[in-house]
Length: 101
Image (tube, rainbow, N blue to C red; front, top):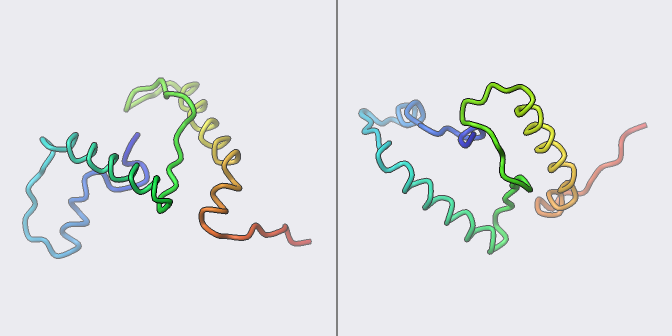
């Protein structure tokens, strides 16, 4: 499920940025991922990143097809967003707006 918000294998981006050839670093992907996760956690501690995680571990595979599990994951994420709404707004330094009449 990681990579759903980003380009997990940014080959097209590399070519769009003018790279002529790409060497696939898939063998080091886990090390790179873990380093990025550590860096993200450091940035959370400095207040520069707001990381939003599920409250509980997600019980599903990377290519899950069980609709019940997928809906549960979706609803849990949606509800987590609602739960953290004010924290997200505060982090972004935004002022909530009232609905227009």
